Image 1: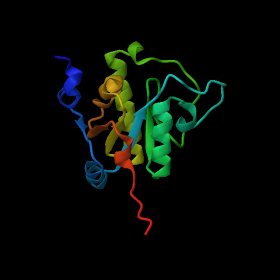
Image 2: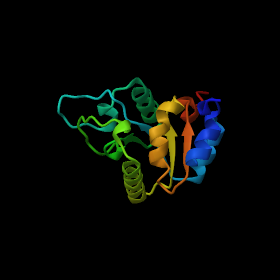
Image 3: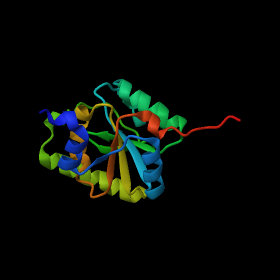
Image 4: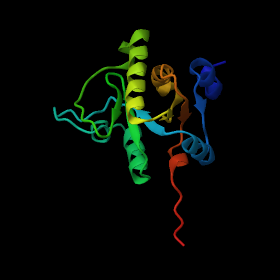
Length: 167
């Protein structure tokens, strides 16, 4: 049997990351932690040599949808990078070309430790990681497993939406 068929158990057993599926779970986690919501970087980047916030640099459709949802719901967020570890919106970056297949186990560990240091400085104590594809998220699960903090995973952006009553 393919391990990704039961991806929730695979992610939990391999990396210690819990998958959440509902806005109720999201709200509970957000109430319990100072949560940083993240997604992974994308191969598609703005490549004109300029420096950009992550939401302007990473041009993959997953990233664009993620950034729109985070900004419209006023969530703090970050982007996981195969080169930089954690990219936050108050930082500027330029194009680079590092694929997760180029990273060693030691690289993943160092990136995870760097993410933890940056999170500690900003006061975050848990990560909620978004990727619609569990298979494509696996390099980031590996990176996040080195944080020593609670990590949660989700595949549906709508669980982070804040409901607004019009009447």
